Length: 279
Image (cartoon, rainbow, N blue to C red; front, side, top):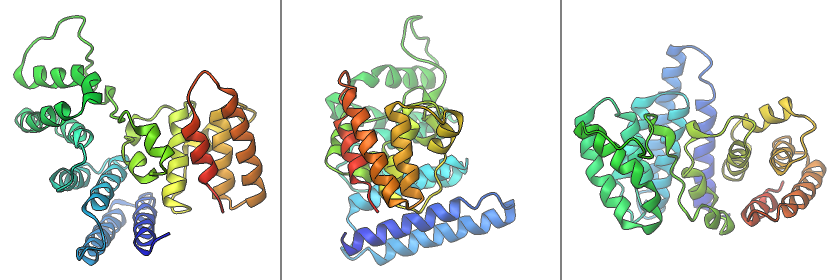
């Protein structure tokens, strides 16, 4: 692992550790947020002289924003999504804009300004065509227009979770940070679903032991004898988090075996992700 990659993982680990301490009171929580903010800014300032690419910083902003979302600190989430949006990168910013729209949903004039950029980003990539109902739904909302009764739009702004069509490809290419940054943690399935397991798996690959995971713990607590591939992935994650080397190898072998049996679906990316997790 390159030195810059290690610094990046170390920074994210610190951020996540501090965010996980919000159980203490509001005053202490605010101090923790101040420390997080200071750490992020200092790290970015250190990396401004060509040590950190703009794209790496872009994904760092998104990850930080989503961690703030999870603790409902919308002000900070907005701030970091804004930083990501203003980043001078070629990456499609559709996902960033959908989050900014959601966070400003009650402010129609603000949503309208984001909508213009959203349409530009939406038209840039053919794979985003499936999100036309979302785009037209937002447009109707800000303009006070009525939609056809059969229009595929719901009031819940998080009804559309942005996952690029190349999500599986990113995992296959072992670009785990970018894949993780595309997942909205608030839109994950309940603990019984596979999104939580994949999310925990990616977090383990990106943050190593830097974050206490919950989706897999909840799943196996509720269904301790579950034998599907989701449960097997969770057993891999938990063995890794416990630093149980023998248990991890055994869990990986079983998970890959179960995933391979699901021939109806393309799960090659999951095998790659599971195989990559090691102590």
